[in-house]
Image (tube, rainbow, N blue to C red):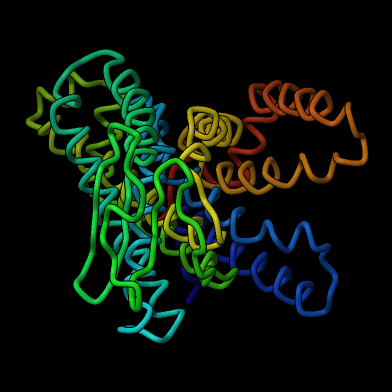
Length: 355
C-alpha cells in the first residue's frame, strides 16, 4: 500500500534529512582534514546562526511581527549559559552534560526576558515591538558592561558596577576557590570552551522540531491567522495576546539556547558582540531566505556566514562582492517565476494536499 504524506510533512522530513546529510558530510570532511582551519572554527557559529535565523523567522515570518533585538536574547543566553557552565565545573565533570545544562539555562533565562519584554508590548498594535526590542538589545549590552560575576565555595557573587569604580576584588571571592566569570566591559574571560559541532547539530535539529511542530499544530495555525488578518482571527475567538506571546517567547528562548552554545565556543566574549548589527545580520538571514521559509533561513544563515571568509581572497573588494551577492539574492528571491519553481520544489505550493 502506497503511503501518501501531506506536502508539508514531506517538506519537514526533507528539511530534517538535509540537515542530517549536511552534518554527516561536514563531519567526514572535518575528520579527514578536508576543511580549512577557518571553516572548522566557523562550524559552531554557523549552527548558532542557523538556529537564530529559524527562531527569528518564527517571530517575523510566522507571527508577522518585526523584532530588532534578537541579539539581545542571544546575549542573555550567552552570559547566563557561561555563568552556569563555569559554576558547575566541579558538580558536573562531564563537558557535554554541562553544556546541555548551560544551554537549558540560556533557554530559560532568555524565555523569561522574552516574557518580560513581550507581555506588555504585544498587547499593542503597530511597530512597538520593533522599537522595544531594539531598546532591549542596547539595554542588555549596557547592563552586561556593568555586571561583575564571580563564583566560589560560598556561591555566586554578583555586583553592578554602575559607578565604574568597582573591580573584581569588590566581590570578595575566596582566593582558593573563587573564579571570575564576567568582568564588566571585559566580558566573560578565561571561559572553558566546551561547545562542539555535534552540540550545534543537535541544537539546529531541536530548533527545527520545535518550530515546525508548532507551525503545523493548531496553535501554529492560530498564529498564522493572526499574521494574515488580526481582525478576522479575533472575531472567531482567537486569543491575540496568548498566541503572540507564545511565538515570541519561544523565539527568544531558542535564541538564548543558541547564545549559550555560542558563548561557550570562545574563551573570551564581550557584550559588544551582540550589538544592533548582529540583530540586523540575523534579520538579513530571514529576509533573504524568505519570510516563513524555514529551509531558506537555514541556507541563508550558512552561506552568508561563510561567504565573507570565502571572499577573503578578494581583499579590499570582498565586502563589495558580498553586497552584490546580497542584492542578486534579493532580486532572485523576488522573481515570480523562480518563486513559483521553488514553491513546487519545497512543497509550499497551494495545490490540494493528499492525506
